[in-house]
Length: 222
Image (cartoon, rainbow, N blue to C red; front, side, top):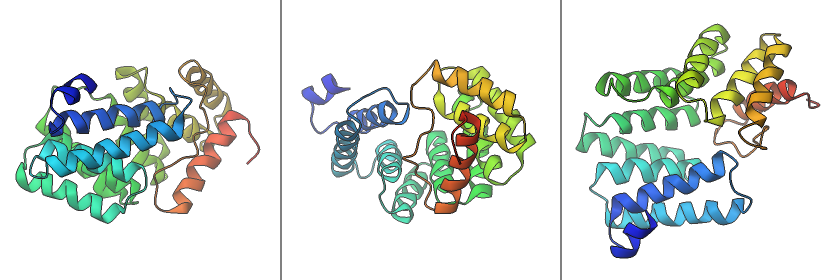
């Protein structure tokens, strides 16, 4: 992506995907210079919006990055809604719409939008969408439904830390501490960042609910 941007600084999709890459480096705990990479992701997302304001790919990816790092959630949902107005069949925008609604605490709508994305793109890898659905069920306190989605997510995408964190917290709340600690052990093989505190949830109660379960799973004081 950086090579593409060096060739054409106005190439919106490359700017937006580079922002996504930097976000993933931060989210998954794969960098030590957390703040520097976070700022780089925000900078790239804003540049992408300046040059690609009518490109639904740019709108959706940039909105996700900016929402993840604290921009006004209503405004970022508005950008994704615009992407969907430009292309109502854009499966990734439906997925990201679901993700932003998860951040906003709109758990039922998050599930509906992710399921729409899966219907529009049935051959897409299901690991990340199922993690999102599982996390929405987790916050709805429907732990058995959450568990089934999260296990499928890990099976499809075993190298992605977020599903492990949510499943560990889910098992902790189900009273299955041995299973929770087993998932934490698998998570530690992927990243040293087990209890991730820089959360995107806008409701502080959602953040505390998630962190309390994860701390319990990791054997930390709650």
